[in-house]
Structure formats: C-alpha cells, structure tokens
Image 1 (tube, one colour):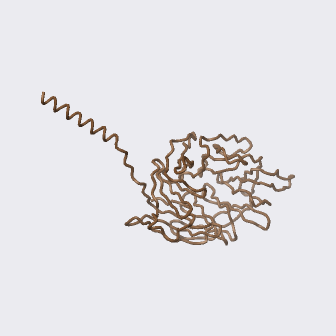
Image 2: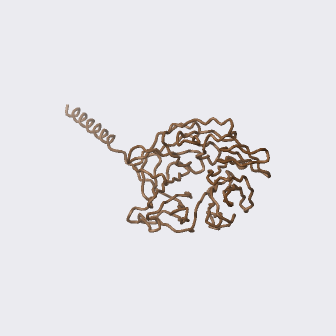
Image 3: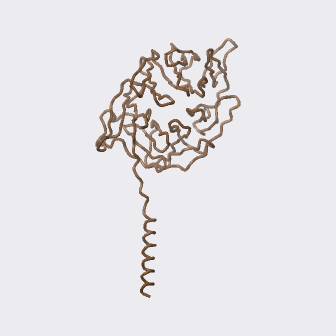
Length: 352
C-alpha cells in the first residue's frame, strides 16, 4: 500500500508540474537585427540625410553614420545592390557594395522607379508648365515616354523590363486625334515607344517587383484594396477585392511577392496582415502594441519574418511579423541627435 500511495503521489505531482508548465506564458525573444539599414532622416522635400544604421558591437546603442545629405527620394535596385536617389540637382546611382557613385541625369527629378531587371529606370521632370516622363539606362541615355500638361499625375510603375504604366489625368493631344482625359496608359519601351490608353478606373498602389501581382484602388476611392494577377491588359482587367478592410499597404518582403498591410486594431494596437502570394488569401495577423502615423514607412526582410518601421519624431522599430514583438533601435537614452524629431524612412535592408 505504501508503494502504491507513493506511486500515486508521484504521478499527481508530475501531472501538476506538467499542467503548471503548460499554463506558463510562452517566452518570446525580442527580434534581433543583423545587416545594414539605410534610412532617410528628415523632410525629403527639402533634402534628407541618408544614414546607415548597423547593430552595436557591444551595449544597446546601434551605430549610425551619415552617408550623404540633401536626398529627396531613394529607391533600391531589384537585386538590392544599388541605390538610385535624387537631389535638387541630379539623379545619382550608388553601388552599395563598393560605395562608388555615378551621376546619371542632371536637373530636378522625381518619381524614381526601377525596371524589374535593374537595367533601366523611369523618372519625371518638370519642363515649364509641363511634366515629362522619361526612361533611362545606367549610362544616362534617356528616352521620352510622355508629356503631360498636368503636374499632378501619379508616378509610373514598371510591370516588365520593357513595360510601365502611368496615369494621365488630363490627356495629351496626339497626331491621331488626341487622348481621352483621365486615362491609364501602358507604355511599351523599345527602340520606339508605344502608348496604349484605356479609361482610368483604378489607381495603382503597388506592383510586385517580380511581376507576380499588383494592388489597386478605385481611382476615386480609398477602399477597397483590389488585387490583379498582372496589368498586361488594362482594358480587360478585372481586379478582385482582398479581405482587408481599412488596410494600408506596408510593402513586399524584399525580393519576394509576400505583401504586408497594416490595419488599426484598437486605439493602442495595430494588426500586421500578410497575404499568401499564390492565392492572395489573408494569413493570421500579428498584433503589435503600437500605432503608426500615416507617414510610417516599412521595409520587410526577404524571409518575411522581420520588419523595420520608421515613423515621425525619430522613431525606428524592429518588428517580428509573426509574434508582433518589437524593439526600438534607439531607446530614448541612446537616440542620436541626427534622428530627434525627424521623420525616419527606411530605404533598404542590406542583409548578411
């Protein structure tokens, strides 16, 4: 009897121990940053600082160094090896491996966008009251795509190495009798430029860098967000709404088509939503105990596991996209003066 009693007591203690272990809250590790991060610090309209942030060798404080100043816009190449950026005087390309720079186009430009193969890019440039859209190769050889009397049209998006789309709010007369106002135009950029116009029904939000999908909105509405497999034929395009009411596009995971959106969950939390790029189904969201301003910008790691968020007032966070756990790059005690009170825009995560 004593042996039996001891057995049951031991079994009871073991079960209780297991139950206690099961009831303990799961221990989660804070996300950890590796590699290099390039960030724009400040108002890009007047020229921001391009700053490189790297992990600390010891202690909590990250390292930072100013790469250049006066940057108005910066876009990484599809292969993440080059950075295209504008100043008030020119377009420059920087090799992110060697640090070498090369001036490509003179003048004040905007709306930088890389072709998917990284061999050329597009940009807009004002010419008097007109706005001109160009493409250029990496030797600075430019090709005029379109001239528009409106300066309010959106930026162009590349959907293939030789194709880009853009909106023309006013329309430009042509030798064939003119272009209807409010059109979306597909430009085929070869030796000669061919323009194919269709009635403007949607505004393009984002195009996957590898051409696997595009997100749009009705051109006169903020919602819903729509998804299309491709934008090859605008006249027969029939985009479908995604299950993400009130969402804001956060970005694609680097070098993949995994898209992320942020959605206000409560007054103090934000849901981070991803979609399966095969069927565009919504995945289980991660809840972050933070809220972000409308100016917040995100960069997602290739693995889609981690995300960097830059926001106003010098805030820079690393977020685990699965658990919602986050850490600040610069706690208040170690926040560098160059970031204080400025809008921070992460540009590219150069991974190890």
